Image (tube, rainbow, N blue to C red):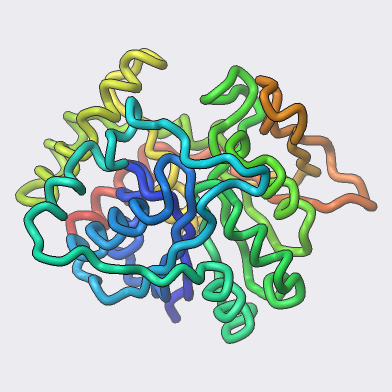
Amino acid sequence: MATKVIVDVDTGVDDAIAILTLLADSEIELLSVTTVTGNIDCVQAAKNTKLMLTKGGSPDVPISTGATKSRSGRKAASAHHVHGSDGLGEIADKYWGTVSETPVFPGNATETLVAAAEKYGPELTIVATGPLTNIANAVLADPVAMSSIRSLFVMGGGFRNGNVTPYAEFNANFDPIAFSTVLHSEMNITLFPLDVTEQVVITRDDITTNLSGDLQQLIVEMTGKYIEFHQKAVGINGFFVHDALPIIALSRPALFQFEAANVYVVTHPENSSYCGQTLRFLPQSDAKETRLAMNCDVRAIKQRIWSLLNTL
């Protein structure tokens, strides 16, 4: 039986690749998508998501927008130098400029998440690849329903290093209050921090060697600015495909090595480089335990991504 999934995204380049990968996996049933403000605002994220769903052959999957700012009031980050002005290396603006009507999305992400949790309970897994504002709002709205789901997979945090400050990863840094709220909820959480996501690097040669046709062209165009950023920022001739890893883990958990820890996030002061830093400690019997993906089979994960994408 396919795993029932909702993804909560701030659809930039790596979210987009994650969505395409998910759509190609016959072991996953995508129920709906909720969008959150992070790399870009939640409405642009919805437009980007709609484009990926269309390109992936599933244009009718429902999309709802959610939080327009973090729980502390922060609005969309200026990530144009990373993901392009539209979040997808300018291909989304180009696409929506060719259609007669841009879709309007309902702004009810919290209600969507809670209703799905109530309906499906332990059959449902939520994958969050952006800031955790929507998830925190849903937890605060109905903690009982949200704690009933099978699992929450989160791309976020980092214990060795950050990527927006020396200490903090973007999703945790953008809304550390939401991140903390979710970590301390009763949900069954698996975290995919930078420690594991930065092990998997995709190069332009990988794309041109392993993909062909329209999909190859789409991903090459979408990742151009993203690769330029990684070359300048971290000195790699490619990019990290952060958000695809929890998607791969849904149906291939054996490709990851997990460990348990008590995880905390620094929430103050907001302008400090430590804000959003995630800290882990050996599990204590009286503290909430989080499962961490800390290592992975890089070669097998990349092969899995290409094999899935080639079925679209």
